[in-house]
Image (cartoon, rainbow, N blue to C red; front, side, top):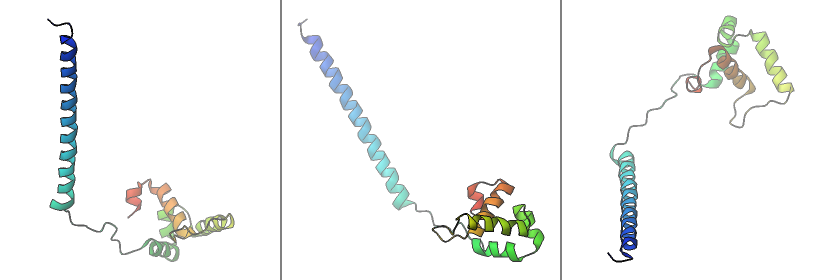
Length: 126
């Protein structure tokens, strides 16, 4: 046996392992590209609107505030007078409409409704 034969054998094994890793990485990248191509172009799912309620958030606020007095109590857990007092306190302390135009009343209704029902944000979106 030659004195440096084991060094060449080790280098050969190292190079073979490196090539195997490279082939594995290239295979993974190519398979991901084909998968993304299939998702984007070959099987597009039709877009279906999710939030299709007849009432907008503001319309629901108006319905609660102008409807039957028990309606607001059952949905928010407070009477109309208490709700109006909470809105006034919030406005006096600097709360304003949100940057996307949601009124203080609507924000408070969503908060109280969340506290009463314990629903997730996905359900609250409805």
